[in-house]
Image 1 (cartoon, rainbow, N blue to C red):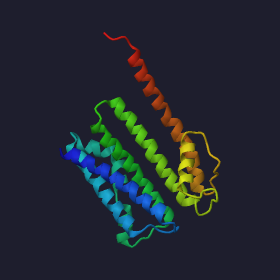
Image 2 (image 1 turned 180 degrees about the horizontal axis):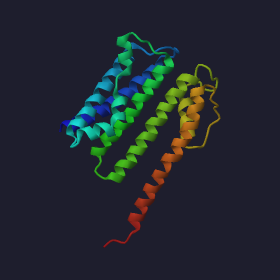
Image 3 (image 1 turned 60 degrees about the horizontal axis):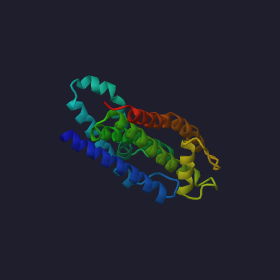
Image 4 (image 1 turned 90 degrees about the horizontal axis):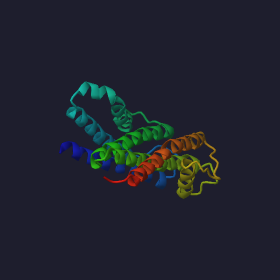
Length: 218
């Protein structure tokens, strides 16, 4: 019961992460450090993620082995934003965006953990995990692209342009918007790779469903 409650909280934390970063990027167009409110939101998200992690460690049969195998999850759950804020260190905008990307990776993991007990069938669970990864990853890529390209790229007039650009690239179609920043060019390379890796999973799953439905019963 406690694990399920924590898993639900991780899902809520993932939504909070998505919402807080969206508000910061879409409604604060100053190319500067993120607000204190955003740092507190990330702190709450990370505390929930840490609670989820240590609850999983506590419920594991071999706690040391679980800790070693999932150490990356622990690293991704550390509230770096608040640590820097309390220590008086003020990372620049780029560093803050990188830290947001770190938490985003943990949010994707949290979505998978939640799907793991929400969906009974392993194949269906894996499919939805891939879908969540593609959708969330594409949206975050659009946010990052918009944050860095909008001030210097005349082709990006709004977030809709950035979202369309990300969708076209993840589907490997490509778009007429050419990135001009280093981050934008990097995302432009990574997104098609993610798309080529993810979309065959959908094809295999649909093919498997069709084959199973075509088999004679009895």
